[in-house]
Amino acid sequence: MAGLGLRSVLVTGANRGIGLGLVQHFLAMPSPPKWVFAGCREPKGQRAQELQNLASKHPNLVIVPLEVSDPASIKAAAARVGEHLEGSGLNLLINNAAIARIIALQEETLETMRQLYTTNTIGPMLLGQAFLPLLKKAAQESPGAGMSCSRAAIINMSSAGGSIGNTLGWDLMQVVSYRCSKAALNMLTKCQSLSYQEHGILCVALHPGWVQTDMGSAAGHQPPVTVDASVRGMLKVLSSLSEKDTGTFLDWEGKVVPW
Image (cartoon, rainbow, N blue to C red; front, side):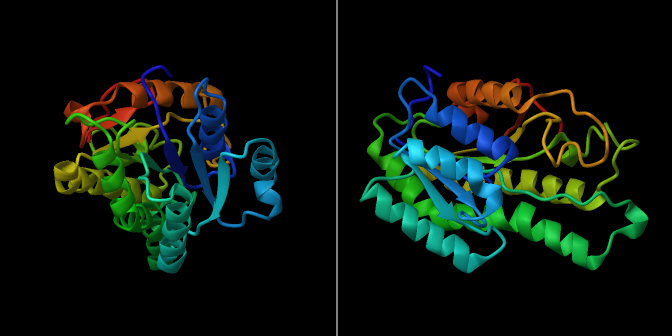
């Protein structure tokens, strides 16, 4: 990724799937970031074993306890990341953590909607707020006025399932609470782009494709995109983003996704 020069990046939901794939690729860059922060719920748990193995080999990888539905956990994570950065800013925040429930519309409840909105929409909002000072610091440290992921950016991992203009896949998976939470995340991304542009912070919603992860395969269908292909594509997209892209909804190949 010649166009993606990062000093620091935080990936939430980094213990498996796309999040873990992103961490692995950041660490494998010819010039990797000085700091790769990997947020996950239980850093010492069995589900974080691969992250633990990576951390034992890469001193620039810091596993950060982070429950994105808990404001106190988010605040503590921001403080911990700030301590490691020692006065420098955070270049890239990737809000990847998300949950889904395979539920048809007739079975949706207040509780499932609340749970998915809290994790998939409110969590990224609170993370943007908590890490704003570090993102602003990174933007101030970078010369030039243009926006980029190498300078300061928030990438919200969305889904084509959140597109109102294209409801492809409805027959396979209704997942109404998931679709609604991602549509709301897209609007959050737009609002963040408008609010944070004065600070030089790029904000984009990114669809990773239908990927071969636990979540992607939950409905019993085989997704067409591997984690490796998705991550490689997304990193290529991230390396090319500029101020003209802030507030947009793109997929892992750089194509515009309908709102």
